[in-house]
Image 1: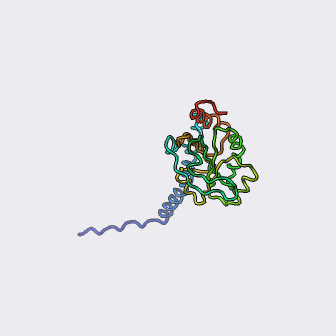
Image 2 (image 1 turned 45 degrees about the vertical axis):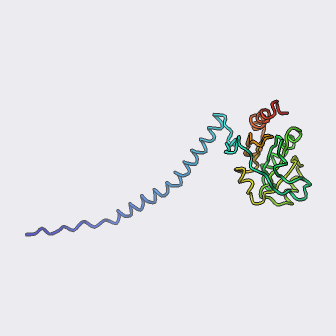
Image 3 (image 1 turned 120 degrees about the vertical axis):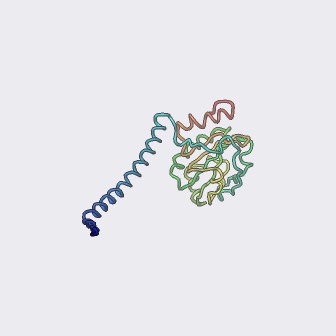
Length: 209
């Protein structure tokens, strides 16, 4: 006599419901996992800055200690300032500042640039980044002009060539065209004292005023 195959017991309705519940629970955990990863990364950055004295704004650049990209930008119309080209920086210790009228940190930084412009040994020029001509003129008319030359970069191509992360951003360029120092974000007392001034001193061979 042949054995009759036993039919498997039908799955109870509770089983798929349980699986769906586990799936929903796992899906709900995804945002928490992502948030935890972001928080851990931010915490690591703050730890590096606060504990080890690192400044997150002093972002390394592949262009440091290399020749600066060539400059050939048209002038800011109505400013009565020359265009920004290689001749405007050649043979001078130059600070190339990237700014825009719509940039709030640029507004905060501007008084610092005006003070730096009082040092006759430092040539300050600007790349006006993705700005409108009238707005840039209004910005300078309201806050003053620390620049010896301004070149407009309406499409941001020059900023790409210079490796700009975000504005304001500044590059100290030696008289021979070598990039000595880069600052991402507005200058403050710490970045001046620990970054720009030592770089100027090294380039000039004496303390920067």
